[in-house]
Image (tube, rainbow, N blue to C red):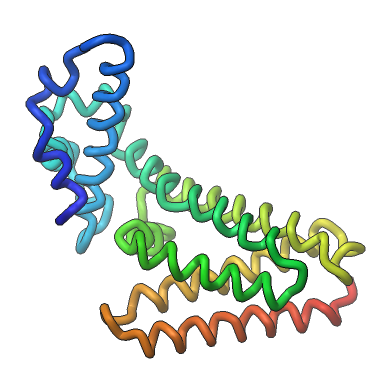
Length: 225
């Protein structure tokens, strides 16, 4: 069942937006907003974000086009919301996975497996982000760039608690974090290219991802600023 299937249960805009008490009104508004995001994601399965029209996204969500503006000021704002929906939960999961580990090996393993699990659970979201990272509309590609910087900043903070990185300059820590985030993005792209059900390819990709990160950190241990 596609993401927009939820939208098919919504009534027309008057029913979907009709107040029924303060709490109910807010809940209805949130459901309609989510239906718009889900409808856009369904349409993005094999298309670029720039090719989507407001009208077809509204139709997929079960509302009239004019009601779209009650939730987003533009299609680009909806695209930015999709970026945030894709990345922010993962950022928290990765930070949690890293803080539970006391050494490089455990941190690498936990991070790679957390990433793998989240990508597999949200493949449509990650296809959207990888496709639109450079080719998307300005606001969307900028939002992705901001989220990638936030991943790097979070990682730089976590790396600073490990020896010999405690004494590294902040700039060097951020450069190292950027390298790791770029490597992880490569792993995401590899995972999305694997045929459904190909567990052997999945496992090979995870092994390669762990090796790649170990190589980066091994080199970092010998770096002198």
